Amino acid sequence: MTWPIEEIAVLLDEAGTETIDTVSHPDNAHRFVPSPHGLNAGYSRNIHWLRIRLSAPADGRLLLEIQPPYLDDLKFFIPDGLGGFQQRQTGDLYPFSSRDLSARAFVLSADLAPDTSQTLYLRLETTSTSLLFLRAFQPEDYAAVLSKDYLLLGLYYGILLVLLLFNLWHGHWRHDDSHRAFLVYLAVTSLFMLSVNGLVAQFAAPEHPAVGHHLLSSMVMAMVAVAAWFHSRILLVDRSSPLLYRYFQGIMALCLVCFIAYLSGYFTEAARVITLISLTIPIVGISRTITLWRQKRAGSLFLAIAYGSSFLSYAVTVMSVQGLLSGSHWQLYSLQVGALIALLAFNFGLFERLRYNRLAHEAAVERERQARNELELQNRARQQQGALIDMLSHEIRTPLSVIRLRLEAGQPSPRMIVHAEQAVAVLEDIVERCDYANRLDNHAISVRSEACDLLATVNEGIAKYRLQHRVSLDCPSTVSTKLVSDTMLLSVLVANLIDNACKYALPGSVIAMRLTNRDAHGCPGVAFQIANHAAASTRPDPDKVFKRYYRAAGAQGTSGSGLGLAIAHSLAERLNGQLNYLHQEEAVTFELWLPQSMS
Image 1: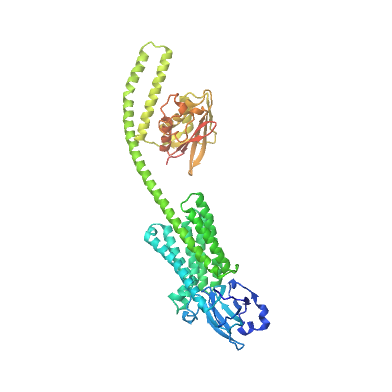
Image 2 (image 1 turned 180 degrees about the horizontal axis):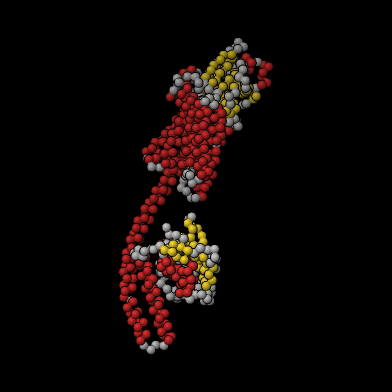
């Protein structure tokens, strides 16, 4: 149970010339400003005097606890009963053995006149934040407070140690960059908290105060730099996100500049900047987490918890050390509690992400296995299909020739002759396309580069199918249709596109063709569009239109093999071009693009 403090007031000593005699003089009493919650002046090189008024207990013995444990120089003035003051001094610049009580906080003992109102003075000079909280205790009560304090700290650091060993034992840091960054961040955070809580000064270097003092100062910069590195990893920030990438790189560079400033004697100024900048990290983290959440990235929920906790604790801590927030000594622990919650959430998020990646990898392996099996089946089917097509190509041509000779030798009617010739032509076309598809599969068709004219090839195709009366050909004089390609393959490709449009165009409708110059992937070329109006039932499925043997549901009544567009698509790729189906409501449109040079 704390002993009541009746008044805490603060006097700012900007010139640093005040003494105990001047500040305790009655004429200067009005210069003290009431500050019931202690001192919170932010990062400042100014000296502050605190006036403390309280009533002494019956035995006159009190312990005055001063937090936080990283204040540089404290001078405590206690009334000596003779009108003067006894001076005591402590701080993190003095050996630990010089303290009145072995505790991580600064604890000063005072023997006062029993049952009297006393006025004490405290002088603070520090390069760290001028943040100071006071509590008074009777000696017998403080022992229980001290035991509870170390018990909670032991639990806190025990959790951090278990978290560190757990991640080391799992070994994900060996192959996962985010886990390596997390381990470094966890280790640096633990060391930083040990320094902030005064445990380094108490246990690691009790007789060498400079070790704890400078370790904490340098850890401020190191903590923010490592935090920026870790957050860039867990938020999946790389050069593909240039703004965020430069933001985190900039923070790490700023930490280096601030560290140099600290070495040059400007720690107060450097810390003021770096603590304000550190507040932006959880804000950026929340924003980036929202983006990852929308992308359904694994672990986003835990990231949201981590950054929400970090933001609240950072905000309280930064406003406290900057002198923007007054309150109780519990503000000292807001950063530690928030950091612990964030570290646990980050750890859960990392393991959730690893679990998702493992499942995704297993699924990918399974898909690869299935794909190999399917490919093997397709290869077998293609081999069987090739054998069938070879047989059809050789065995059907002979009876077809016999039929043609018989028609020529007999006396059939003209109509019969026309129908027979059309049937023969259809059968020959199917056989020819099957044979062509088989040769493409077996890479039996070679490509020869030669001068070509796409416009001339298109006109040849129009003439072949006698479509002059129903074709609208648009080719401005400024368009260059000259190509270096394979003339024969180009003719087959264009003929298949024209044949497809002719078969499925509505009777009497116009087939629109257009030639333009267009670059693709930085390469100049010529684009040929062909569009025809077709019944809704004969419109192709965009996902299946170039698949072999595919025909739309309403196209079954029209003769064809289902190979024309598949062959055309393969030929376009062989000529280093592209054939695309442009899904439009008013027409069935295909666009062929070919480079002006195949090289």
